[in-house]
Image 1 (cartoon, rainbow, N blue to C red):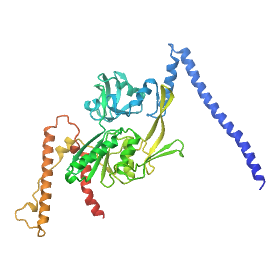
Image 2 (cartoon, rainbow, N blue to C red; image 1 turned 30 degrees about the vertical axis):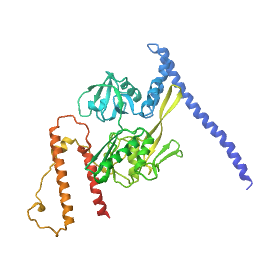
Image 3 (cartoon, rainbow, N blue to C red; image 1 turned 30 degrees about the horizontal axis):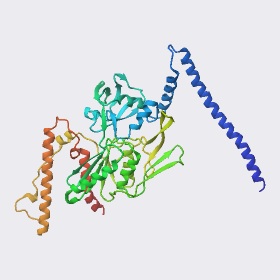
Image 4 (cartoon, rainbow, N blue to C red; image 1 turned 180 degrees about the horizontal axis):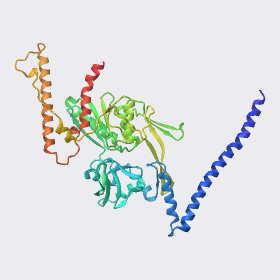
Amino acid sequence: MKLKPIILIVLLAVGLPFAHAKKEIADKSRFEKLELFNKVIYLIENQYYRQVDEGKLIQGAIKGMMNTLDPHSAYLDPDLYQRIQEDTKGEFAGLGIEVTQKDGIIVITTPIEDTPADKAGLMPGDKIVEIEGENAIGLPLEEATQKMKGKAGTKVTIGIARDGVDGVKQYTLTRKVIKVSAVKSKLLKSHYAYIRLTQFQEKGSKQIVKAIKNLRKSARNKNLKGIVLDLRYNPGGLLQEAVNVSSIFLKDGIVVSTEYRDPKHKEIHYVKKIGHKELDIPVVVLINGASASASEIVAGALQDSSRAIIMGTPSFGKGSVQSVINIDKDKGVKLTVAQYMTPSGKKIQAIGIKPDIFVDEYEQEWTDDNKKLKQFMREKDLANHLTATIETEEEKKLREKEEKEERRLRAEELKRQRNARKNKNKKKSFKPDSDYQVYQAVNYLEALPRIKNIIN
């Protein structure tokens, strides 16, 4: 028994030199790679056809190093470092597009509603291959973004390649200060709240609460029967706002957790227990391939808790966490440092959120032109028809009320179709009550009480 401490000391004595030797090997390997870097710089400085700026060489090498990591990590030179602070303030001068990078090509994730890009007809999936006549393929994402930004009122021309369209189409857009209205809302069918969140900005959650309260006041009998939360084309934004929005609909629990390089290092963001709550009203969340980041956090949290039905198409899959790290007072790096996970531990990165109910997106004109709305003659429409039972006065009033509502809805639908045909060739702003996926979400909410009765 007395030998055990001695053996332990011997093992430690052997282990310490081994660990030290291992570190020396790693350091030697790094020095050898740095020596390779020095040799290449030496060759360029001494044998390149023209004289070069050593500072630019070093910055180019750093940018290239960052580009090998992922599309969201970047070196921030003084200009980029200053401008990166504008991203979440809700007001900036630019075109109004969110972009990512795939195989060296800048791809539009989302054209933000009511911006120059949206009004020009730019679409998710469009590839930006030229900026001001210069090739943009292979350009670092942050650099491309800054080239498209500028002073309000100035113009920029971008070349767009679109799947299914031959050649490159040039779009000349006028930069403007982008004032994004985070929340848009409307009451549908007298009882259903439609809430569209375009970006997760400061106070976005408060605007949602305000919209719900106002729509409840406007609802028939002040009775809201369901909420459609539209996160389609929402590129994300502030993490805290994702927590705040989720907390409106959740009583407690986890909204999202963050896993770092060290699996033991985790950050957990919980539901806020204070503030306005909507815990009982049915919710449908709409997502699509342009719903990213904070949108996916909210959809994942409500899905995992079975608080909402997620409807639409799979989301973008941006589940990585970036941190801006200072190098000195005017330079830094934006570095991917972690991944988001839903409350059940599912990762979002490159996977996205899969909807509970898949509903594809259709052009409204197509659905209007192909929808059959027939007026069938039914037994109850026949004169002196026989009723199944002898109606009480109360039952008769209820039946007549339901028939009146049915006629009203049919008349509204016919009017909507006539207007759609009349305005077919006009550019229309987004209208939730004539959107196919919103229509299906409201259909689900209308049917939900009957579904629950069948299940129970």
